[in-house]
Length: 200
Image (cartoon, helix red, strand yellow):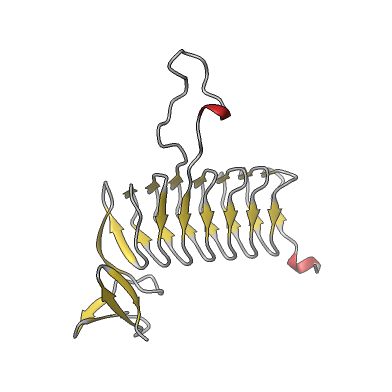
């Protein structure tokens, strides 16, 4: 790997020795990347962001400042996580067991959030595990996702609900003559039984 391709880690960041950083990935001030985490090439981990043990990020992911990605999350290529967004991992969170003893690693089973290629999670949004966010979907700022999200879905609210579709360019699609059109790229999409796909 050439020097230009080496990852960049700021001195105040905390990256575990067993974590893997891909070429040109950058980890900024006060971020923490835990044991066994695997980050692809060209990722950007913002100030104060947290990536849990064994979390996997594809190539070109961007975690904004103070985003929290708890294990065992899996992010596809090109996923955007907005500032202070949270991906949870505990269906029934408790600090203690019923007998009052501290809850330890053996007292619960972590469940993860899976995010498909190119999807975006807005600032301060919460994705409650287990959930799958489809490819190229857009979760609005402040939304709370409690169930799976289709590819290309535009999700808003608490709990999050679909109010439309977005294209790969990230803009809301416009319906024309029974098809959906991206106003930026002109790309065409077809809706079938509640799912959307690019037109063949």
